[in-house]
Length: 231
Image: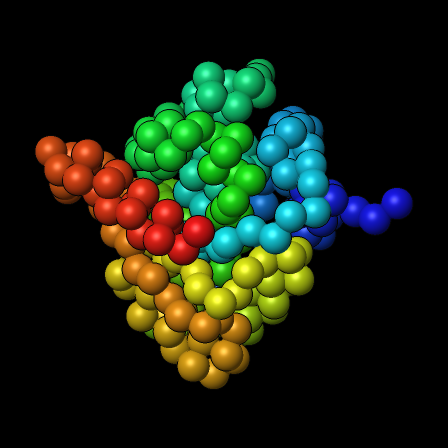
């Protein structure tokens, strides 16, 4: 029996290992290695929402946050929305992630998570969480493009990862990129690799929630218009 889209994503996630170099002060978090329950809830999610072989459109984030997919294994999904919207409870962790709030509010207006996930697959070119250490020893979320050396060190892994995402069964004629700075780096990669026909750029959910929360509804409508134009 051929594997479903969800089975392929599960295999992809469980095979993730970053063995490349990192600049001093940066670390990669692999939630599938750190917490056995992450593997379990991630499996439940992809079996529930991706149990078919349909082609999907690709929404491209930056890299997971340590409170979202860095815990649940599901992009833009904290434990609150994993339980309240997706119906999957996680006992070993409790997280709130602002990007998750925006994405699930947007999905609600799209028609619900089930309808949304039938059409779209969300992931990142660097699919593991990156953290950096501050001068006082705290660890904070980091983006793959925060440091030029970091980007150069992870770039080959990102290219390999994007190829693997595409092989899951994605429509590559047009993709949706979250974050303007993310788009700059993905344009560079796409110019070199010719992965995607065109890149449509949307403001990143974290940016919207943090700096433009008064205009949240306008951004939800922009997402819906942009995503629906492609159907």
